[in-house]
Image: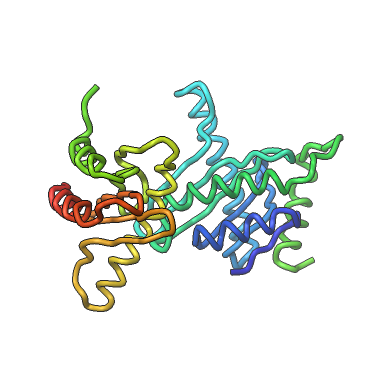
Length: 157
Length: 116
């Protein structure tokens, strides 16, 4: 399984998760939709679409949770016929990330949730401190940064 | 508060000497449906891993043309994990090494047969 990460500290926790949870696809992204790491994807365009959709689903579910329950929903599971999707937040000192993973009958929701909890802990432990003056991702730089990250993941400049 | 339909099954298993935890788990999801746990037992973790193990054991038995798996037992240094399934449900028991595994096996197979 090929794992690629824009930020190197993500790679080890992600590799451990993939090996243990036996999921087939995975994405770690910023809530803005910027990709941080991926496994199982073959094309940059698929990563880009999945990131945009995951960020949108996360934002919608968060708002829905606030309206229904007073606080954002943090995890979402969608069972398909052959494959299932799990989307949840991972909090680190570097900020909150969104993690999307897809699994089939080789794994289960219970295993994915179990190893996701461990992934969150090891990700938080591996994360370097947030930069003091972290710049927000602005609209005019978004596409440039997205393309830069995709190029880093798929080896195209 | 209404009792779960599995409460009596779990209570009968937990009454067995040396049983530390008994759980009803969804075999496909590995999620706990009901459980009876002693302090210190991590039900979610045991359920996810034991259901996965049972599922693979059942598929292995089928692949080897052995028919349905009825009972699975894992012996470890400090105890045993037993599992018995019916339809999509798995009964999981965590027991001490000194537990009467014969009695537990009989109870589990009997109880699994009564699962919906």
